[in-house]
Length: 90
Image 1 (cartoon, rainbow, N blue to C red):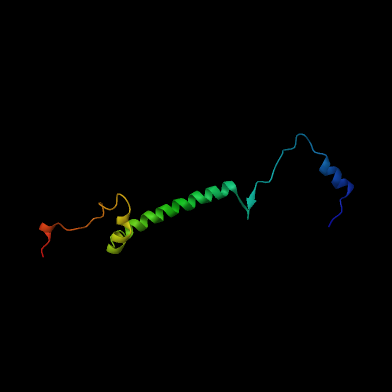
Image 2 (cartoon, one colour; image 1 turned 180 degrees about the vertical axis):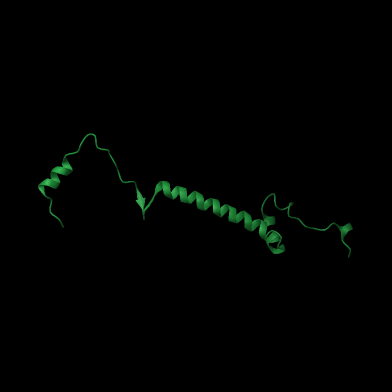
């Protein structure tokens, strides 16, 4: 450990009133709260867009449509693909 010299002690105790006041922001692993919020909102946007893509991409798979999507409100009648009896050729 370095010993404190008189010159260094004098420099630390004497502060100019015109000098800017600064503080180190709270951080974890180099990420501050504002940068974590910014990256979190970007990640949430990508996650929502990937989820919407997955719903529309897998929406035509009968198993996904019946087991997953028809259990959601407002999608049950929209995704109902039953054939009317008069249109059924069998």
